[in-house]
Image (cartoon, rainbow, N blue to C red; front, side, top):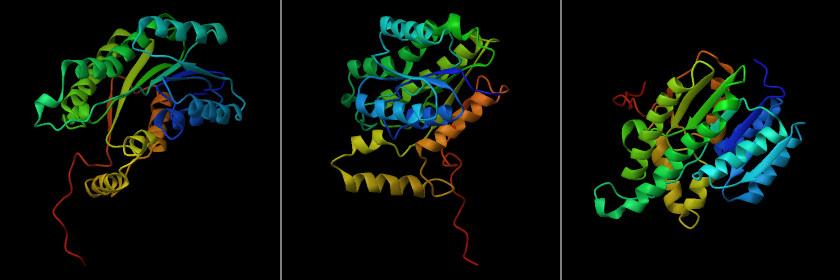
Length: 265
């Protein structure tokens, strides 16, 4: 499948060292025109856009809160006015509030509302806005970047795990609703060493290094996922027409667990 002159919409893709940016670079290398959406990090998004333009493709940066139906419609109108088509949507939107699981009082109703708005409502509103037009593409695909937390129930907070579980179910429902014209899948990574985490631990370098060490020690390959690893999987899903209705977990084998330590030979 050739992506040359196709059009991709990447939401929540403003961070320069993020999954959306890594995906934008790969798509641009394939000749795909891009809309890069973000809520903030505008300067980073513009730098990513300029990198992609160096590949000879057209890129629009859209700033907007996609939990609002009118903003989703605005983004759709922008894409259709510019290119008259959309072939790929990758939703990299995500937010959380860290809270110890045992301290239920650490989460309030408004925390759930904010986290569900970004992780669940927005992917639905985007699909709703683009349904008519993406259904016309000969190789239409929607990919939601979810989380392994939505499968295991283990994440930065109960609200986050619940929201990502809902996003996974939304993915399966949309896969049915938009078939046969559109394939819908979710990629569910564990911890990804990206600028989101770097910013979260900006003044806690020791804690960040401890987190990286813990992640390495608890998967089969002593590896921490990078945005480029997720972007490569996104490209594989885009290019493979046989993948639909899947929740693809990526955690370097952490969910299996390590076998008992083997004696050194």
